[in-house]
Length: 327
Image (cartoon, rainbow, N blue to C red; front, side):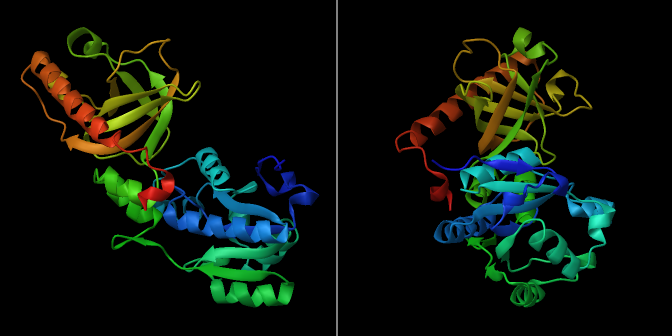
């Protein structure tokens, strides 16, 4: 029987049995293909040595503390990252609150006080661009040197490329915000998804066009305005629907200052309206545009639905791909 997955939210909550650990360190926003290669190696070492496959990540993102103006938008919340890490075979995660005090730790202090004393690291696996400690003074060479002195091994994993694109959180943000969700799925090894509560809409769709589920997303990174083939899933009972989703400002109805994310289900909604959903973005159909009337918009939505159904018919001729088949 495998050990339960554990998440700790601060050094004071880390138990004495956290180690011996195989540890990787980073923000892991998106938990993309490059991250998965590192997590896979952590799991392999842990299984071979009988140690715990472990991750040290941060909340908030360190840049929000040391250089707020340069802080990136985030694709995933810490809870979402943990769920994806669990799927990748990680056994435990420390979400370290990143504070000014943590930022001031020298590379040596960071390794000795956190990695060794608190987390019992026997092996550390990082990407080739890994930096750590005050003003990012530490690099992989220093980590290897400290490992030899303090008794842990260091393994550096090379970057992953996919069809000529270097896989990174920043490249993914660019693709998603450009609407290239199918390309982003290859780098993520899964479709990009937004999660959040279903919130009341303006009621116009139900009356004049088609009823939709309106999502209040948790992610800071949103696909470009437009219409997408999507899959919606109820986060409470796992009901799932093929769907079409519009991201935009509702120009046909006079426009709005607030961006809306409206999902039209291709099959009737049965069993009650979900309270929270995940919307996976599979393919971009078209730009959002203003129509001359609600009736014209409804006609276009039904055309979009027809194209989405054709997409799913083609898709369903083959088995639904596993995450490994995206890369």
